[in-house]
Each structure stands twice: as structure tokens, then as C-alpha cells.
Image (cartoon, rainbow, N blue to C red):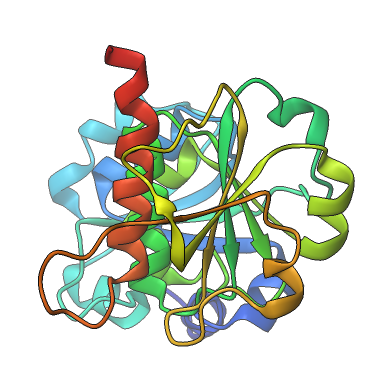
Length: 249
């Protein structure tokens, strides 16, 4: 049975300041929890219903687990319909971006993306296409927001997401910067080479002017129909797909 203090702590982790204070974030759903258990992340505690108790035996015995009722799970879940398990996971300390580790590959750079669903989808998409690093501006939505974590469907366990001053990072990274702009070159005919940063901007305002000034090559996804703009997560998926396409040529 969960105590009031446990419920209070777990509920507080839905807020960024308490996640930072306790160094913990929440992962919901057995399948996603397994993804994190098999990664470099450290799971602190798993709260689960009786239905998944036998499955948890396959995980490390070092992980604390508590069987609770579905009603109790509902009190600590951020979901309208609680999953079968919820875990608290320790937040990694990865405040420094190692630009040298980004050589000879492509990484995504996000400038001010705000929507948790978009962020989670971008991470999941990056994972699908084998992109292992996403570098974010300091005002991009928190990757450990429960809605972001849920939207990644476990992919966060395999994609490194770091936050930094983008202007300083891009300046010293010494990598080509492909910025997504409306007046850029056709993405389908662009020669990307073998490495670089693919820069995407805020849902409403795009890439900030001072960051735009650092773009090596502006690219655009040609519009054929009448839509005013593309969702940033969709734009990221098209960019990732185009980068992957050269692998299969």
C-alpha cells in the first residue's frame, strides 16, 4: 500500500522543478520500463499491478518493486487510463555536449520546440532512423516531462538528449548546419555529405534569427499542396528519412 508521502512524491515528479530536485523522472508501461531497464538508465523503483508481477522477474533483482492496486496506480499516474506499471528512473547527468562525438554522423538540433507530443515523436523518429543524438536549446520542452517520455514509447532509452546554449555549441562544433527554412534549397536534391547538424525550430516562430545566422545550408521541404506549414515532428521525420535514403542508394 502506498503512503501519502509516496503518492505526494510521485505526483510531484510531473513538475520539472521537483524532477530536478529529486533527480528522478517517471516512465509508465511495462514495455517502456523494460526499454530503460536494458539501457544505461538506472531504475529506482517499479510500482506495478499483480498482472505484470511475473514479467518483472526477468528484470534485475537490484530494482525495487512494489505491487499495488490499479486504484493506487491511478493516483500516481499521469495518464487518464493508467498503464500496468510505473517506474521512477534516475536522471542522467549529461549537461556537456561532446562535439567530437558527433563527427561522421548526423544529429538533430532543436531550437525552442515546446510541445511534449512533438518532442516525444521526434525522439521516437530519431531512434527509428538510427540518429542517436539530439541537442536542444535551453528553452526546449523538458525531455523528462511525463508526456514526452510517454510519446517516445521507450525510444528515450536509446537517444541522447542534451540541453545547451545553441549559439555557443554550433559555433565550436565545427560541423555543417542544415537549417530548415521556407526559402531553403530542395531537401530532395541537397547533397548532405557524411556528417552534420539538422536544425529545426519552434512550432510557431521557427528558428531564431541569431541561430539562423549560423546555418551553413538552408533546406526546405517543397510544398505541393496548400497547407501553410508542416508540423515540426513531421518535418523532422522527413529530414531523417532523407538522410537515411542515401544509406540505401
